[in-house]
Every structure is written in C-alpha cells, then in structure tokens.
Image (cartoon, rainbow, N blue to C red; front, side, top):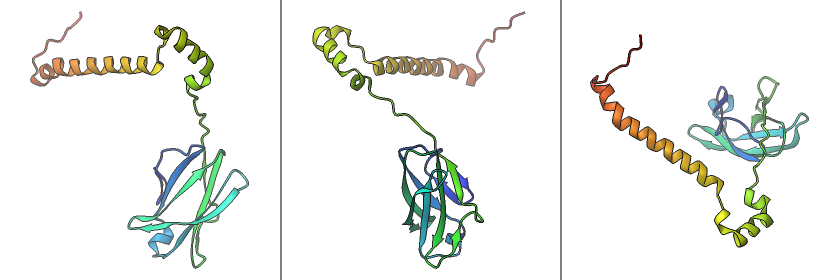
Length: 164
C-alpha cells in the first residue's frame, strides 16, 4: 500500500502486535544517498524511539519494524550526512488499528472439551468443519451454474422469462 508518494507498506493497514515492511523511494533515494536510516516512534509522545539502517535495493530502501500495542506510528528518514526527509517538519504519522486476537475455543474451554471428548465423543462438533462444509457447498453450486448456464449465455441460446 502506498501511504504517501514514494513510501510503501506491505499491508493495507497497520495492526498492533504485527510486523510491517517499509519501502522508501523518496527524496533521499532519488538523490543517491548511500545510507538511509528509519527514525520512528509510537504513540502521541513518540515512545520507544529507534533509528535503524535501511537496506538499499534497486527499488529503494527497505526495513521491517515490529508494531507494538499502540494507537499511532510516527517516522521519518535521514541519511548518513544529516539530511532528513521528515514531511517538511511534520513527520509521517499513521494510525494503528487494535485487533484483538481470538482465542482458540478449545484452549478457552480446555476442561470442558476434555470432559466431552472422554465421556461423549459423539458430541464433538468442530466449528471450522461447519464453515468449510458451507463453503464447499457454495463452490459446488457456483461451478454447477457456470457449467450449466455459461454456454447458454455465450451462445445466446437461452430463454428469458418476461413477466407481463
């Protein structure tokens, strides 16, 4: 995803507790800087400030950053000679979405699950199986419709019901 001109993330949105790859092909890359550093921090007050070197590629400079549990991500770039690309003094700032990790239902109810599996194995129903079964039915129906109706539509040999 291109965030602003010449800055890209490998994801559509920033999510807490994840890793993001940043690609930079901006001012410092275009002016042939040999080394570029990624200067970043999190939250409103730039907590956990860090400065990491970026790897130079044919398409720009790249690095990876772990996003902690925060609400915003701020960064800028500088080269080894002290030239900065900081969005004209405003820095680059983006919101970070909080995504709660869903806990495994088996882990959540470990004791209850163990009781069911040992005393009543016929009652075990895996939720994922239900969803996969429904999707397989939908896919089969879609394939059937494609095989049955597509040749008629392509050839123009179909009857259209006209209600009056």
